[in-house]
Length: 163
Image (cartoon, rainbow, N blue to C red; front, side, top):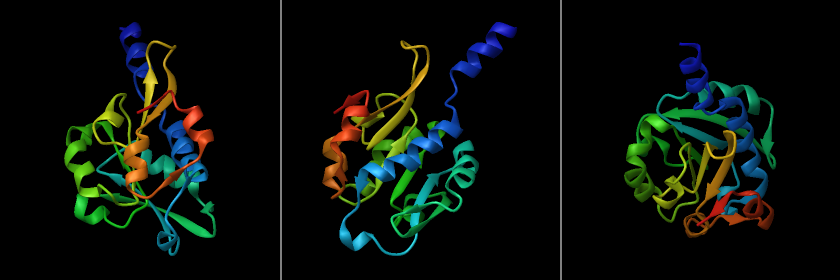
């Protein structure tokens, strides 16, 4: 029974570390000029442990001069206007629908499952089971740039894979 418990823990994304990733993506991606005023909104689509971790991690932090606000959204319509939208594993079955709703908009869609950057996510944070369950990320450069976002070369070099 102990083995099953350890194996299950190894399979779960470390949300504290994931909040660090999400925040640091803001340092390597530029949003278009007309999206640089007001609060910088990081949305979480549905319920996720990431919401609490993000609130703790970004408290008092800024993106440029903008204060960061973390909000939970229950629908795509509510999430319009955020700069980053995190889609937890439980909601990832809707990635194509969510991706279509934000296509061409300056919103960074982040998921937590390997391979979703090929299905509409901008970035997927995942545990690489072939590399001792290290936390890694992959990106969809074309999708990110379609929304007018500018990615630094540094971030692309840090990604496990760029589609």
